[in-house]
Image (cartoon, rainbow, N blue to C red):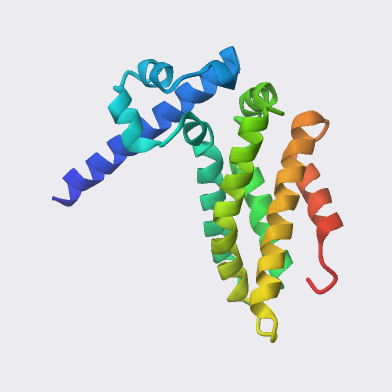
Length: 196
């Protein structure tokens, strides 16, 4: 039974990834405003109904990769030693993720993102994706804090950290003169709070 469940989950993940990649490819080729859910479903060889089982909109399909990267970032943060100052733990996790995820595939990812960069509808969805993760991140940070204002400080650190990541990635997309990790390291250093 476990093997069947594992196979089913792998098939679901593969379908979700195929829809995401089809959405990215079509948006890069035609522009995000011209892409339809039907076209994405056709490109991934699934029905419109199947698309709807995985994503509620083409924007959600486009940003599935961002959502997965943010989820992975939460895992990496949780793995950091509990005694590290919060910003140090956040920074180490972000830099580890940059090394993990953007080394071999960075150029194709960068080229796709450049083609989508600046579209007002997509910017709003990207911000929404970051906002959805912000509460979970604040919870993880809050577990590392003991001061009286821990909940408020955790929310501020989470918001500042995610804004720093977003700005660093946008800067790197616009001027990739160094590896993403270098841009990220500089941005994190500039944004680091005095209290860590």
